[in-house]
Structure formats: structure tokens, C-alpha cells
Length: 393
Length: 191
Image (cartoon, rainbow over all chains, first blue to last red; front, side):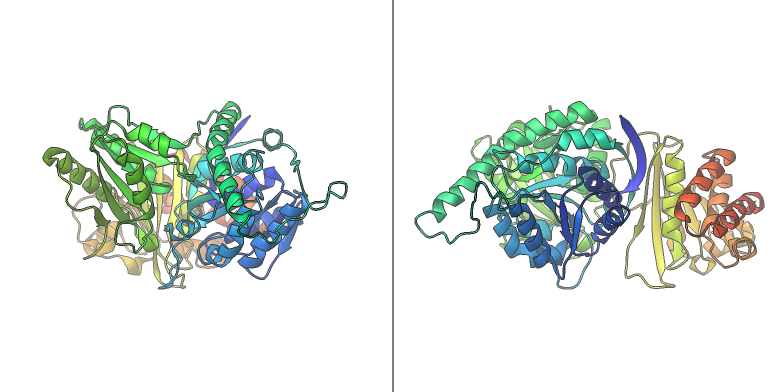
């Protein structure tokens, strides 16, 4: 059963949370995420969900409460953005190392300072090494679909890791968009009942969590987290196939758009991938062989899928909506370039940092990127690796 | 219809441009079209100039950037008439302006020789029908008349459903808003 609706990204995600009906949600409001927890709290007070909603005094406490609930055996969620995720940082590591399948939307927003409330990916990139699975969403539809799939990915016995569902602040969170939502029963059956293998309130099989872990085991536990991340790739694909069966929408590790015969490609996350697709459609009409690669999963980094999608292109531009201050470009650039290095195909890979603090990515910006790539293909030379897009210099 | 029809709203904080852009999108979506409705968020201050945007298409819309070359420009506050209103608008652009002035006078203020200009006194209409100056809903009536994008009756039907949803706790304002849209639809002036 499909139902087409016109709602905002935040409304779509709150709707998904309602249909998932988690046991516990602990959250603190922060722009542009506020509406997600605000709308969800109205579902709680209207009795439309069975969720225990915990109002906390900070995001650090929000994740702490979600950790406590999840360790106790509940299906737990939180939601945050920007400074909130930064404040939660310490507890994100605890959630992933305790192997707790907490699902949480992250409405992507710049980090201060200077103070800014608009979209970029600095918040998400801050936790890219925290052991949390990161799904990215081009629009409200994907944010909704990712939320529902995230539950199954997180709780899979081979995975047991937190999953964050990222979508762009304001651009996706506050914009009205047309999407298809599933009916409640379909979602309920898809996510199923959460049955944790080990949990603190299981009096018959007592366990302890969060123990002191010295040099004799800490390293092995970290290795196990890596193994879970590795296993997550297969699980994400399997869950995607099952989701396609109920929704008709395809989800994999990456979204390869018009890349089959492409000579030039742009790699970009979230809503900007949509704008890049629009530009690719126009350039294709002019006969240019161009395409877009949108990683849906950033952690674990799907390097095999990236290699496979880009192995035949001549030049690639990676667009990063976050800065690393390494002077060697953005975070995704490093990963994509590393993935392509071993192919030995002499693919030229360059980087553009764009859209920081909500700077609009214009279609002519993307056109300029493809122009630059065309020059690189023609000359066979890429002299400048790190570039800035839509910036006054 | 062009592949993707783009709308830009010029207003001041507090005039309801964001609400109007979202409501317009919602009621056009009811017609089976694909839509986007989004404001350009700045520091939210009463009275500060703000922009809001719509995209309308028969097919799914990929693009997520701001609208730079609008087909239709809607101006909620006549004091904003100036170069920013005409920026990026093509020769066949449509302007819908809340003002007591005539389309010819607006044309002189905007210093343009092309495009189509529509005017409506949405402040007076909203004062008469809703009881306060809130020009956003009447402008939607003017939009329906000027663009002929959707049939008037169908639009009103959708709008009624939406207002019922939006003002569940304030049913007294629904009738006024509908009346405001109807009057603007009838009273909008073209050249």
C-alpha cells in the first residue's frame, strides 16, 4: 500500500518514528531538528505510540538515556544536529562500543563558530570515526526510507551498532516535498519486534555492560567493532532488497546515476546529489558523458562499490560539505581517492569543498565542476587538488 | 508547462510567505503534481525581507538549490518592489504584487518592459475578510487566476481541506481565509 503525501523532511522522519513505535525516545530539541522531536512528542501525548519519551537536559544526556534504555533491552532512539551531536560525541563512542542498536536522525548543520544554524556536514563528519553507521539521504523520501531500514540494520545480529540517518538541515528538513509513505502495518511488520540477545533486564541470564577493559581485551573488542562494520555492508544491501519488495524503491550502498558509460563523475552526499543529477541530465542532452555517484552509506565506507562505480571514468570530483583543515581537502575526498588509488587506472581525483554554513550550491557551480573535469580529461593533468566552490576569494 | 515551473516569493518576516509557499505546494501536490516549497531561512525577524520558493513539475524534482531564475514572482509587500524582484526573471516572467497601485504603475517602479504584471490589494482584502492584514492567503487566489495552473474550484476544495487541518483549533478563521482567496481571485488586475 502506497500513499503519496506532501510533507517536510522533519515531518517525514517523525512519521517514520511513529510507525516504528520505539520503546524509548530521549531527545533534546535543536534547530533544525526541533520539529522531529516536537512532532514525535505530540504522537506520544496523543497516545499514537507506546513510546516512553524522556525529556533530558542536554544531548549528552539524551544519548546517555538512549544507551541506558538500549542496554536494558529496549528499542531506543534519539535525534540531534550540529552542536547537539558535538555535545553527544563522547556518548556516541560508548553506544557503538557497547554494540547498542540505537537509531538516531542527524539533521545536518554547521558547527560553530562563527555561530551558524544552516546546512553542512561538519556535524556528521565529526563522528565518522566513532563506530556509528552513517546513512545519508538525498531528500525527504530517502530520509523516511532510511529511518525504517536503519532499525533492521542496527538490530541485525551480525551488526549491533548505532545507525545515524543524516539529512540536510533546512534544505531537506524544512522543505515541503512529495513522497510516498508506507502504511503502518507494513512498517510494523518490516521492523518487527526487537528481541535483543543479551540485555541488562534479563534476570535469567545476567550480563554486565560497560566494563573496564584493559590492554588484554580492549584491542580485540575494537577489532570486533570493525568486523561488525564490515558485516554491515552485506546487511545494508540485504535490508535494502527487502525494503524494495515492500516499497518499490531501490536502496544499496551507493546510488550510481548515469555512470555506466560516464567519463566524468561527481561524488556527493545528500541533497546536493539531487542538484548534481539535474545538471547531469542537462549535460547528457548536450552529449557529455557525465554521471553522479552518491554514497548512501558513508560509514562503513563502501569502497568496493565506489571502485566498481568509478573504475571506468577518467576524472572524478569529490564534493565535500565539510572541511578537515588538514590542507589536503575534505573527509570524503580522502576516502574516495584512497579507494581509487589501488585501481591503478590513472583516474584523476580532485576535491571541491562547497556549501559550508548553508551556502547555496547553484547549478552553475556543478556545471563549473564538470567544465574543470573536461579540461583535466583533455589535458591529462590535474594540478590543483583542493578547490572551493561558490566561495568569494 | 515548462519542465519545472519555479516561483519566488518576496515578503517581510511575519507576512506569512513561508506558510503560503508551503500551503500552495500542498494544494498543488493534491493535483498529482510534484512540488517543493521552502523558505530561505535567515535570522528570523519581524519585518526583515525574506524569500520563499516553489518548484512545480509533472515529474519528480531532483534539484535542491534556491530558485535563481523564477517563472513567477510573488511580492507580498509593495515596499520591496525594486531590482531584487526582477533579478533573474525572463521576458515571459509573471509578477503578482500586493499593492493598491495599477499594473502599469508597478511596471514603472520595476523599470521593466517585458513580463506580465498582476496586482491585487491583498492588505485590504485580508482586513475585510480575516480582520487583520495578512496578505499571504489572498495572494494564492491571485496566483491561481494569473497562472491558470490549476482549476479554481479544485484549488478551493484542496485549500478548504488544508485550512481545516491547519486551523483545527481556530475554525473561525477558515471561512475568512477562503473568502480572502475568492476575492483576490476575482479582483486581481492585469494590464
